[in-house]
Image (tube, rainbow, N blue to C red; front, side, top):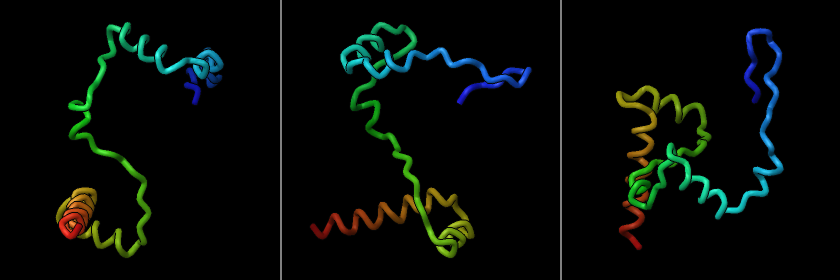
Length: 91
């Protein structure tokens, strides 16, 4: 998506996409390590990370969750975690 300046004309895209797509993993990592504004992450950094996933629910189910006294995401997380833990214990 190109940003539009005040005159309404799209700002030209100056990205060299061919060069970008040709970068190897080693080149990307070297560039990140050389960038003073970037910091590398390790497994510990991501240990408590959340994953965002698209979810499709029927209207009735979603309305029920919305009518509860807690945020929809928190309730769904708790329900899915409970389901996972109850089925993990059986294995």
